[in-house]
Image (cartoon, rainbow, N blue to C red; front, top):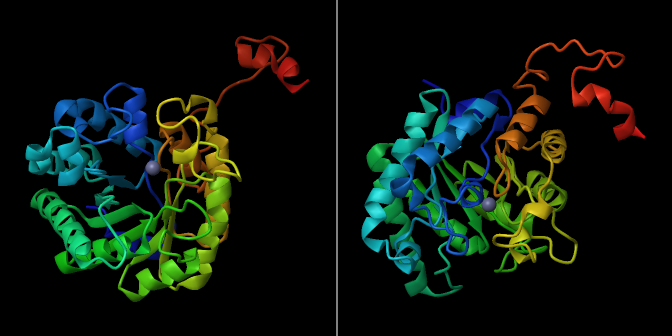
Amino acid sequence: MPKSILERLKQGVVLGDGGYLLALENRGYVQAGPFTPEVTIEHPNALRALHEEFLFAGAEVLQVLAFYASENKLAQIGYAGKLADINRAAVTIAREAANNQALVAGDLCLTWKYKAADDTAADECRQLFDDQIRYQMDVGVDFFIAETFLWAGEALLALERIKKAGLPAMVTLAFEGPKTRDGKTPGEAAKMLEGAGADIVGTNCWMDPAHMLPVVAEMRKAVKCYVAAQPVGYRCTDQVPFFTGSKGFPDKLNPYQLTRYELGDFAKQARDVGVNYIGGCCGCEGSHIRQMARVLGKKPLELREWKVDYQHPQSATEAYKQLREA
Ligand SMILES: [Zn+2]
């Protein structure tokens, strides 16, 4: 059995996995727009294959696909009655794919129900989180990742519910700009979450590596606990530094795709500023995670030795080298 997430982090950087919903949307199994995860019961083999791909690429944690598997989100697409089935299936499939080679992280995320200084809304969020926690823990997860929160206040509620359930908690925020929707800088939000008992704090989704790096570096400086970063694999701009605001969202993102090397560079930069948990989010496929694994020294650089002869080419790679480098 793999060690616990906290034992693993004590030993060094842990590599997470990539993004599921956008990858499965690209393959035709998820609907762009709602981005709900009914794929867990409708096309379980497609999800299992993607988990296995990330594991093969070097991921040390498989995150269950329960993003937007809350009752309100599932109700939008007629699946409210399948809340338990979808959450349980998400964990079962990840467990099977992990095959004791990777940790399995439960998942909670933003609900779009949170409102600042509104006790009724807060209780509604608590209930949505508790339902997902209960069904995921029915099958069994090693820790929880609560992710993609635009409000620090909502992230704190998710953390409170995970703590109540007694599992380690990683809580990561998504940034649309320099502050959360409740006006916290990355450093302030990280400190709040650490103070409330989060084991790992950080940022995921929305931003590309270039825009996320300074955000997570600020968080790293602000806290003593473990820090996580999982950027998207789509290029953003300074004007709109988050991919969900780009003209390509939700289903014309191909031209914005980053290469594996850009995510590999991010892995190195994140490690160098002291980030402990490094992975990818939307737009990060197996190739990106594999390159991150190589850069972090978790995978060999080459699959097998290749005897290259540019004078007597036996492949396009050899034949057109000069043309590509001209
Ligand atoms: Zn994402």
